[in-house]
Amino acid sequence: MKLSILMPVYNEEDRVADALKQALAVDYPCEIELVVVDDGSRDGTGEVLGRVDDARLRVITHQRNAGKGAAIKTAVDNAEGEYMVILDADLEYDPQDIPRLLEPVLDGRATVVYGNRTFGSHSSYSFWYVVGNKGVTLAANVLYNSYIGDLETCFKLMPLELYRSLQVRSRGFGMEAEVTGKLLRQRIRPYEVPISYRARGREEGKKITWKDGVEAIWILARERTRRRPVGAAAR
Image (cartoon, rainbow, N blue to C red; front, side):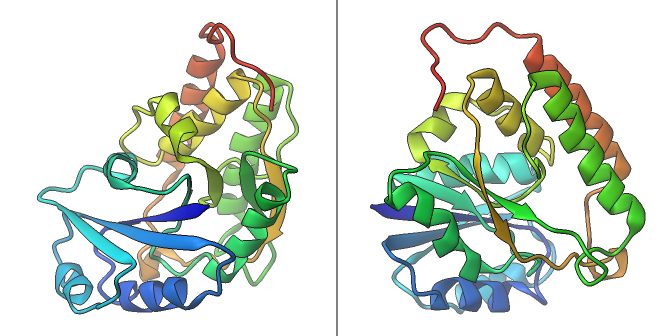
């Protein structure tokens, strides 16, 4: 199996070199490629990316910032693996956890795997950030009669063709809710594994806001009211 690690990047000059180094240093149980999309960065991110020499790395550049969802769409369109997982460049997630996400897939227990963050004093920069995350996840569980632990996690591992079939339209952070809503609407329940996490604060460049949480709930409700595709089956 080949895994495509998709990394959207926007103005991460100070972190992207470390993010790439960490991702490429992991001992993966399968072949990987790292597809990075520079989403119109206006700092020195592009120059940093240009200095990395690794055959597993491919860099694609957006001339203008289009949002995380758009960057992921570009990465998905260019990926060549059988499976995919998203890894942000902000160093909040540890790529050493990716092999743990792969375990349930490689041993046949799961098709879709989410990394479940356990928030604590060392891993979240504010009370309201955690409440917002849990509120969006609760909305999904109520709307879809599910019981997932972390909807907004970046670590969503699934077959590349499955992601493409979802036809995600959200261009920003709303893509997380849209992906989960569409999976749950098809009765595909993610298998969850615990992961490590360290949230950065606003002063460090945290971009998501309360408006993204409101949008996520609206997207979940929108997807819930749509008719489930004919022939979709539980996984």
